[in-house]
Length: 322
Image (cartoon, rainbow, N blue to C red; front, side, top):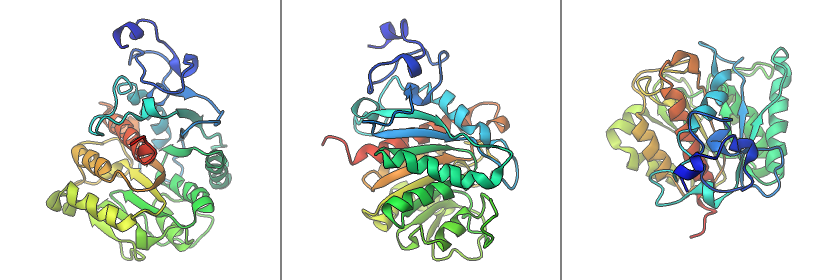
């Protein structure tokens, strides 16, 4: 396996027959599904579905996150040759069946219909069994996703990696704003703040609505292991949704985003945190706010693709053979 397969494998997103396994197609060619997984709308027998939501009509600053799902998939082509590093030999690509479900279809010119379409999209997937890892898009997309998950699991624990709390007051049910999604989720009772936590915060918030937070400076000073222990203690075994805004990373590591804020997490800190919280009951996750046009190097999409793989590991960790 490896070099010989690279000579013959191409477009495995459409041509592969095996549901599991690493992929050796040249990173620079072929159809770019996430991690070279199969593109399919058939959810039967699959463990996890990756889906994209190219929506950025709710941003407060720079647009462009609609191109995030495509960029994350392309960047992920660097990874499927080997199991993910740092997971003690755990290889979700070989041990579980993961699919690329493609993107949500919606009318970009009819924004009011978007939340319901996304909620139904996610609900339709998790009804069939697989959990979801979603690529944004701006952070508003997490609200309809949380609504879908709460219908199945009840009020959720949420671990939110972010520079911003997204708890700006907003009691207008018709507003669509990436800075108020958590306010609305908490007010709607679909997030259990007693079992949730925000990590990486470094902007002001007048009222956290009872949501605990660990700011970026605390991560730097107390260390990733300490913060991971705090997260695990907070959420326990409760059904948990993990949402990772790429601006949780410092702009030095992820410049391609709409609202960058200095003083953020380093890539290695994010990697350590995600690996060290393995064992929590992750039912779904997302990575959002990747706006590749503001990053000529592609490093933001590369970071997001790695985060997405770590989220896959978290979602499947408790289901592995021990």
